[in-house]
Length: 490
Image (tube, rainbow, N blue to C red; front, top):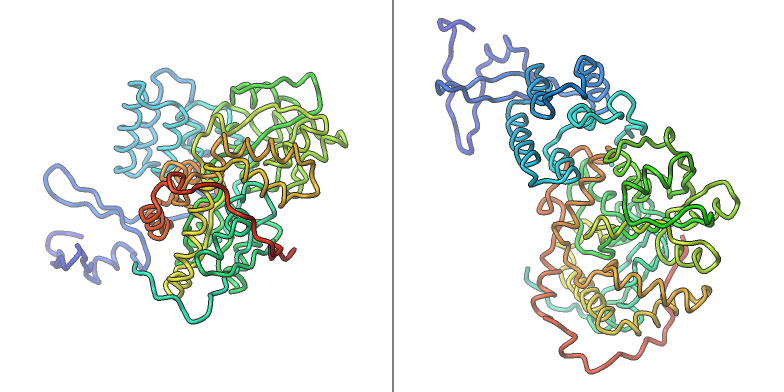
């Protein structure tokens, strides 16, 4: 628009501005369109319309446009980033922040893994990272890009509230739930709990959405995806499993044990078949992430066989797979029956929010007393497991009475020693971040979400501050509840 046709717009509260109709008409802007804002050196502001496209389409376009960029060309990261910015494949602000990351990476302040994590949080597509890092996944990533389908306590009521919790499956990783019930912590807090088994993470979360359950326990990604797809009151309220509790097992003596993730993904699995739970869950997602870090493509450099969760070792026994990824106690049972441990993912990933307690903000607001009671009971259970590991073993053996007691004991101690059982119910920021990075990488999330956006730690922090270190006050173990645990198979 020429100076003679310029019009004036006024800045209102919170920086809001209405573009004149003539400007919108010339620029072809409609309601909901995105405009990129850039402050120029002379103090003027440039507004540039930006076309928003689907993530899958964006990655395909970027791969096509990046064919002229040689990832092995001299000059490294900085020159490749500059070329992407020159071709307008990166917004200016993203380009500047990427430059800061590259500075830290080249100074040795960030590992390759941390660099990738920060870049994913920044919003870079996987194809951009492939080009920048010169991996062989740039043209053929070797994995699908999945579509996106989705404080005051109130006084106790006259009758005890009944709370329904839907767990993805009956798992040793959910031990705090079982301790809270069998050691009487739910009862002590004045709440009755019905614990149901849904058969998977999506199924468990669906019961909350449908109003059939008040809470669900599973990978937090299902609540985050629901938030992205319009269930804006989806919320994560506590930690149930705090580690990447994935163990690789095999019966082939030629497959040795390693604690090096690079050796595991590039050598142990090379040319072999590995059984995992279905995508996009944790085992599958972890393999995709390790493959990207070390330049290995699923179903190209190794094969992936997906089976129902809890059944991962079966294809190895049937000789349809060479390696299986499994959680305790499934991995421990397989080891007791003749397999051996090949790789422990928790030794590499550190804090990781593998399983979380999820709900909806509407329920929390409508039932503050019941919510605080559930969270306080789980805080007590988490502390109790670490204060009395023998009692944690006893409860686990009670829960998994069909399995060998010694195997369940070793599996429970593994969960405690490797901090799969969190010491506190509040969601840790680093554990949340590591989970979000992997799911942002494999494409199950549109964007990385900060902890404050999805997590409500208020009740968990209140419980922690109120209770303190209970190990200092407990004189000994508690008697286990006599009544049977209310579990409905789904």
